[in-house]
Amino acid sequence: MWLRAARLPTLTAAITPVLVGSAVPAASGRFDAVVFAAALGGALLIQVGANYANDLFDFQKGADAADRLGPTRVTATGAVTQRQIAIATAVVFTLAALCGGLLLVKGGVIVLVVGLASIVAALTYVGGPWPYGYHGLGDLACFVFFGVVPVATLDLLHGGALTPASIGAALPVGCLISAILVVNNLRDLEQDRRSGKRTLAVILGDGPTRLEWALLVGLAYAMPAAGVLAGLWGAGALVAWLSAPLAIRLAMLLRRERGRSLNAVLRDTARLNLLFNALFALGLILR
Image (cartoon, rainbow, N blue to C red; front, side, top):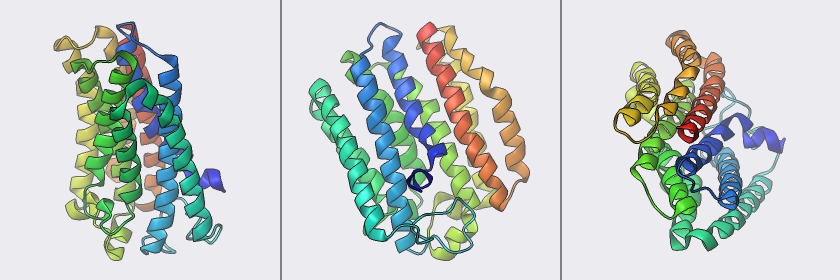
């Protein structure tokens, strides 16, 4: 039950920023195994905590109705009480903070700021007095907190420097993780509209949201070539293009799928995120 609430397929969004953010400094011999392990553990725990918090807060705000198209939420079905999932959320974020403590020794105050900001962002996505996920800002926050922030921070933690290579590498990471959220919100568009949850998909509408997905994925695939041409990385970064057949298949599916059938597109977009960025990270190291 708790694994179901953790929404395991979404955890690729926690893994890939750590892979790419560690690969950039590793390519120049700046790699710290303790930093990698603590960052990976902390990122996974923050993602699980965010999923638990969303399960609770969406239920409280009435966004999880009986006709929900996505995976079953444990609070909405009564599998756990609101108190139980609130405690679980607090426990998971506390464990994440312990991982952050290891990084704090290495990186100082910047780690404290990034860690606290990440936890606040996770809790206020659908919680608090002004949940930004209900006001069309979820996609932007996803890009920032799953792309730019972790990749750049890991470059600093591994080697003590922020390089243009890490800023460039953050872009495809943020794009593909945001694409996961786009499919999620596209699937829930009508239900979210009825419940008053104004995601960017609700604001844009069905067609433009599908176009947003295509633009995000297209930008992710353009970045390896752009980075190689700009001299940020070696030609090895182009190995990420080996994942293109999956991206093309998903683009074709997204054109025709509706409603609950988008769950398969969501699952495979998460897989695309993992495959592309694992290959990208490997290519950055191999140069």
